[in-house]
Amino acid sequence: MNHPATASSLKRPLPAELLAALESIFEDRLSTSQAMREHHGRDESSYDPMLPDAVVFAQTTEEVAQTVKLCASHDVPVIPYGTGTSLEGHILALRGGVTIDLSQMNQVLAVHAEDQTVTVQAGVTRKQLNQEIRDTGLFFPIDPGADASLGGMAATRASGTNAVRYGTMRENTLALTVVTSDGRVIKTGTRAKKSSAGYDLTRIFVGSEGTLGIITEVTVRIYPQPEAVSAAVCSFPSTAEAVNSVIRTIQMGVPVARVEFLDENSVRSINAHDKLGLPEKPLLLFEFHGSENGVAEQAQLVQEIAAEYNAIGFEWATRPEDRTRLWTARHNAYFAMLQMRPGGRAISTDCCVPISRLAECILDTKADCEKNDMIYSIIGHVGDGNFHVLMMVDPNDAADVAKAEGVNARMVARAISMDGTCTGEHGVGMHKMDFLVQEHGEEAIESMRILKHAFDPKNILNPGKIIQW
Image 1 (cartoon, helix red, strand yellow):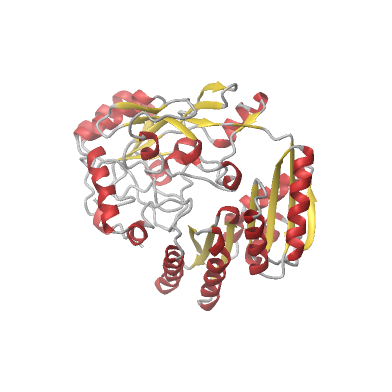
Image 2: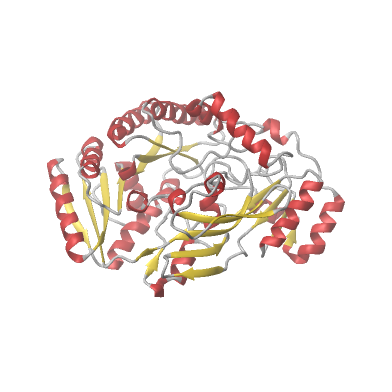
């Protein structure tokens, strides 16, 4: 686990001249209050809060550029902030500085329904976008669970429950507007379906977590709303049978839109949180998109596969309200687990492996959690080999926290040994910096460091994240 002590020791007071300049630009959209700084100095990670010295609420790309230019002139760190839902310490102000809150940059700038693209400001959230384009018959499918901002989703290369069918932010981001570390504004990519014109700057900034530039506008693909949608839920006697049925489904090429795995601990917690009556056994939650006939055929085939692996109680949810109830419970799983240890803190982590190794990786991780008496749950977007482990710990018990971090470290080592990755969608932030070295090796990390030094020579953009300076 990366420790922030070194970075925080570099923190210095915000220059009065800089504060005065920011106040002249933002007036009442600048705050140095303790409450506002605390709000922007924490995310959903297990780290203690690390507060910026000031928060500004930008409304335009030009205001972001002005802020960065001023901060660069004083060597003051700048941290972009979307909705604060990150899980690995991405938005924490290790060295203090200025947080730029992009939530007021929430305009849908252009909808090109005929090309199935849309351009938005970075603060637009995925739910807002889908609400605003609903009448076009199109939708944006990337669903990381939280109602994250599109800028944050691009910055962390987010994905989520629909990735098995529609891909991740990497595949669905066409173009960006980015403010560089010296306050210049550049545009990457176009709305064209493909391009071979020069370096792919869009892919460099997607997943850079605010360390190479601040994303202020995003152009993404959108998709036709499916003619028919159906969900199904079924339980299994064991984790192995549940996961192996998914592996079989994917290997047979069934185009499921979503397939989520919940272990018995997850089911128990959401039953309590959402007042459901699901069997407290390993569970799969499927969703199918397509024509009426196509959906029926997909679902029938999946039901047959599940039966081969001893599925229990295969049930359909074709009514929108039933599907919403199930998926809402799935998205509430994180908060449901928090209730399983009142006063505890959640350590949430993820990894991703080739689909053929998924059952093995989950089972070994589960056994490790049991061996260490963890209060835990395992949930997975198992259609693409990605799963999450959430462990509840006593934040005041160093030994308890160390046990959880040990489980996490062994899970990551296991995934990497299977030619997988230390994170399928959480991103690196602070928490997974050491694992990134383990996954890629020192030479690759040095190449990343060269990029960081080239794009941000003063190390003011979200310092202390992804790689050591």
